[in-house]
Length: 116
Image (tube, rainbow, N blue to C red):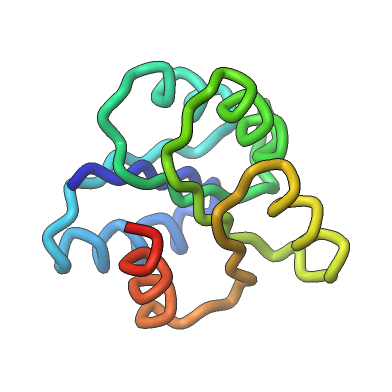
């Protein structure tokens, strides 16, 4: 199963990618919103892990554009934006789940399993 990780913090991105590969996922990783939009133009992802605070194009705009195009791939937001209003906004725009950083890898994997 192919997962797209959209994360600009290299340390987090590498850790998430490693954990997913250990679980048998195929992982593509990009570090900005423009690259995420380009990657998502191609079908094939079963899940997107999306940070919101991205360079070039904000994660909220990536998500909004994805849903506007009718793409229904599950999106799990993983972000430091932790207020209730942030979570509501992310879910209302089209996220399927919302995970606040820092998070435990086990919780991330469990949420992914629930979405898949």
